[in-house]
Image (spheres, rainbow, N blue to C red):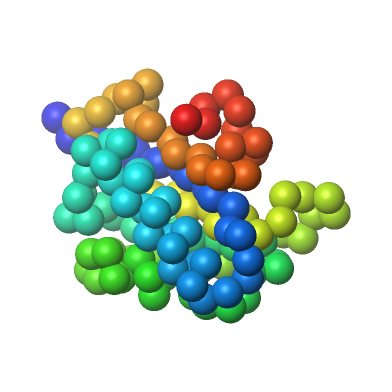
Length: 121
């Protein structure tokens, strides 16, 4: 029976450029889909957040390029906490899946692995 689940992920960009945002967004979203055996049709909504130092491009624009055209997307800026890891793109995906919560793979890439050492791949 399909259930609604939330999947988290994050990655650290190399620079505040549109090219870096495109690469990071596509890599992170495709990794989450593959690890959880999902397609965009399984998705309910996607929240994409960036740290305040990332303003070169909207990550949602690149999500649409990998099949998320019909998925409600929302971009926001993270809280500007002093000393926080810079240049981080975070995502929370709500989806329909047969997997239980223990079977969900949360994906943390590059420098963002430090954010969740307990679950990072």
